[in-house]
Amino acid sequence: MKELTAENVDAIFMDCLFAEGEDTADPVIVNGILHNFGFHRGRLAGHKQEIAELLSSLPEGFRTDKGGGWSFLNACMTKDGRQWGEHRNVEQLLVVEQLLVLGIATGQASMLMPREMWKAMPGGMPYFSIKIAPDALVPMDKFNKVFDLLVSIGGAPESMRTDFLLHHTNDPTDEYRFQGHLGFGGKYRRKTNTVDCYREDENEERLKIIERLNAELAKLS
Image (cartoon, rainbow, N blue to C red; front, side, top):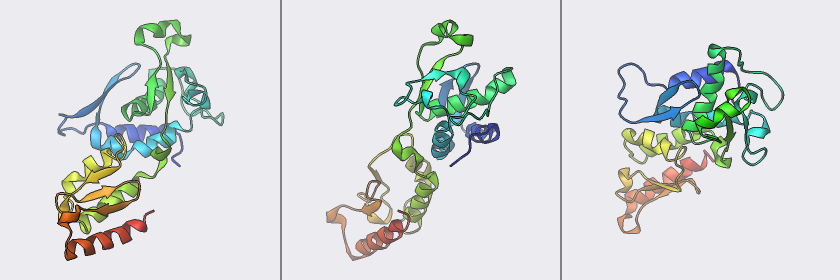
């Protein structure tokens, strides 16, 4: 479990930003409290599980299934009563805002009111809530390892990795068509952690690949 500290939040936040010279054509845009941000979609997806772990350390008043949402002013504390962030000035406010916008960018946090209503709230700060799906805490490295197998045994193109991770984090899907050596119908099925292909495309070679792949995938369960 990733510990909620200013250093851990800042490290993930900085990694999700675009590096100089990177293609910024498909960013995830988030309007924060003091700043607006554009995140790298692929790296953001890769950190979603860690962001879920960080958010899960906030007080339960922020949970949609518990307190329903709470003031940003309370987000500097963990649910165990430990202070991890500050609100004393802009620099110290930023790290708590970083966690909030990472949550929004990954669909795990949301503001509870429009910006024009913030001034009526304590300190002029918004209320927000967090909603973490049960499978969001499945280690992200598992899906990287799954895709490693799809590439090395199944012949999936490495260029699909970012899209594969996106479809198992920000936009969870039950099946993913990776094709490769299994032909057009070559699929990875998330719920069973197995692969298969269209019955009409089965042959001796493909059935051996499916058997080998499923055996290796079972070791990751």
